[in-house]
Amino acid sequence: MARTTVGARKATSGAAPRVKPSLKQACTASGRTARPTNRYCYLCHNGIVCQYCLGLAEVKPEICTSDVSFKCPGCHELGERDARCKLSPYHAFTCNIDGRSTQVLEGPVIIQGVCERASKTQVCAESILILHLVCVGMERRGSLPKLLYTSLEDYHTQDSLVYEEVFFDFGTDEKLVRWSKKASLLGVRLAERNFGQKIIFVTVHSEVNHGDLFVGKDRNGNDVAMEVADFVNCLFNPPLDKVVYASTLFMLTCGHVVAFEESYKAMKQAITR
Image 1 (cartoon, rainbow, N blue to C red):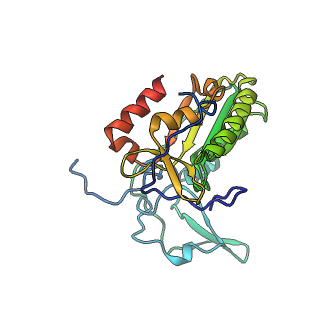
Image 2 (cartoon, rainbow, N blue to C red; image 1 turned 60 degrees about the vertical axis):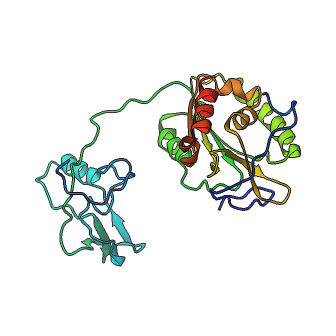
């Protein structure tokens, strides 16, 4: 569970009272048989292979022990190519018994899909900033921004790839003043780097009744939210707004912000402004 130095409680999507920023100095105004799919699977698509593509009706306990190793279809194919050997059965799960690699399942795994890999890839050589802004109380373990950074760090130096993760909480006027100062210092420091590419993620819940975006906790530790326009103005307080300009922005939030027409229009206007 994500925690800050003030010990904020974990936030969950739901109803939250709407607050308005009151300090002007703090912010500027087919015939195919259906089967379960996993959107993170690189066969289903995207990510690691799932149990259904491996033809497993259920995940058996014996393949979940710590001494069992898993080899993905891509690595199996690549190993055969490097060894220049004939096609061999695909045993996805193996364990080491008396120094020998032994298959865990009774038979080989039959892939229930098309296994494809890219023949080549290109990596952007420009300096890259990955900025992750997280609403206080949000869970961030296994986050997409951190996964992106981990995927790119082998291709960059420490200076050419920068990852920043910053928690925000401006649920009260006092907190809004503190965030304004923090965002200002962050904006100045990042603007000096003149990054070639800027990728910004905002992880935040949206309120279920209006599509407002959560901004943090009130004095009693309860979640509060702001209208989308006010949220964007306060979050990207100058000069942090200059860092956002010409960047790629991802809003990692609940669907309520696009389910309500008013909040959806406000989001589009704030992004294109």
